[in-house]
Length: 256
Ligand code: ADP
Ligand code: MG
Image (cartoon, rainbow, N blue to C red):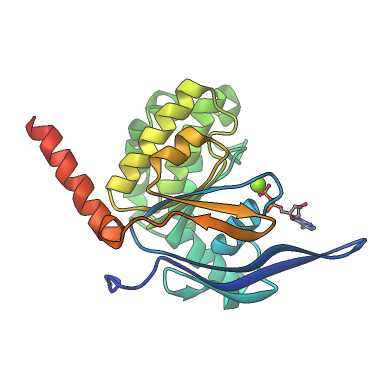
């Protein structure tokens, strides 16, 4: 069922996360309120320890807030039980981690098929074809039958991206996706993210990389668990407006 256009993709309301440390409670996210519309490409920057990964984990439902509410794709993620959370996550979000987290005993194509099997999306006989097409898209179809350990870091990251896209989720979350890549491979990754944004995916990318951040249309900065800045673009440049602009650019390019 199509979502009403005016519903946010991510809607965080006064999210606070406190850990109990030996020396007492430590507040890692402090009253974060944030809305991301469908189709936005958001980069999240901030010093190490500022809460970036914790914020991403809240959105993915990997971690729960101490207080506040987390709505993603219209789901109250903070209230979902483990089983429903796993199903929702499988269908709604693709996560790309810094260290890829491919399953070492499965081949690359099996890794990519996993989210489709898990989320029970696409017909069984279509899954392998789709996985191969995604591997072609990220340029590593020739490595499909290999184990992840036989691939370079850049190739493993490409495989992780293909896996994140497998179930065709509307939202892609990435935590320092270029942290382990050389600058050339990182640049190719930026282009890929930009293509995804142009296709209408919502991207929420934690990064230290100013190059990657420059590709995003919106940059959020965290400091000590607080939103330090949010350079929100003008409303007409956001969400569907952005897609429209991108589409027009693509069209202009293809006609040039
Ligand atoms: P970033 O991704 O911006 O580097 P994180 O979100 O990983 O920051 O962590 C923010 C802070 O929360 C850090 O000081 C970290 O030590 C602390 N932290 C993260 N997870 C836990 C945990 N499970 N228990 C206690 N402290 C944690
Ligand atoms: Mg982190």
